[in-house]
Length: 367
Ligand code: GDP
Image (cartoon, rainbow, N blue to C red):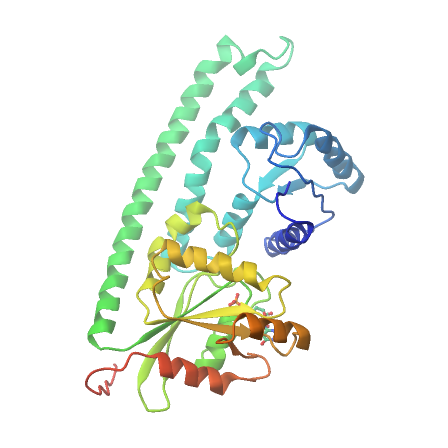
């Protein structure tokens, strides 16, 4: 289902397919429906569900992925009608984050987000189970009948309590880890080392640029969300001053709010930077939409008041017409290619010019 133009829908679906492939799925077919709003019961319209079921049958698909967040009952109804697993965009993104989390903090943050997503959906799951068991013989009485409701509910309550405990514990753990990071940050500001945060839509080339600018060996993957745990590297300006460059969490449209919440402490680190280098993929069909999505998240964590340097990357692969259009759109942007190295000197200069000047020249020698 989509409310935007056909092009918006196509872009969003192409991205969803890329996300699904990142998660290890093989994408068979896409289905779009234009509607004013989602169907409350089945998300897509009832007639479209029949089309979907037919596609599932014809392709032998074992999963349906919806480009949006489904309510617990929409998910359940769709599963019952299509007879295969149904996943929404939020669950898919959470899954990818889970696969990519490496640090202890990143793992804890993802688990927290997953549990918060799961908690309100537990009821639906329990109901489906009890309805299935109660369905045979007695015409499928709602809720699974008298005999089944008791134990079902008890199990559900235990599950919920266990999850709530785990959520509370994860929150405490994450808070502890945040404190450690804050201490490190405080040390940094005492040392007056300016910090530059590299932000940008996922796959824009943040890791590649970080590598280029600092010679750091950061993992570069042609996959969405390769960057999950922030990496910080030191760089030296041409006048000898030191500054830090950090790669941040990859941003994506409709980033689930559970993720923004769970990663708040990591994202907030961006708000502490002196400069945001906002990397845009010059080859993307809709870079403006990506810029909007990233700025939205930056605003959510209070990083929108920082100076921002827009960088259009991948100019080696973009066509001249697009580049001209982007130049007109963002005259102040720096055009670069992390691959060919074009524009990198200009980028370094632009970054250095925007670093805050200390009142007294500090040539700190960091340990
Ligand atoms: P991140 O998710 O923003 O950190 O993006 P990465 O640095 O991991 O890069 C994502 C993909 O874009 C990788 O396949 C890179 O090889 C590719 N890429 C990065 N920079 C450039 C560039 O300047 N030109 C081209 N053609 N591809 C690039």
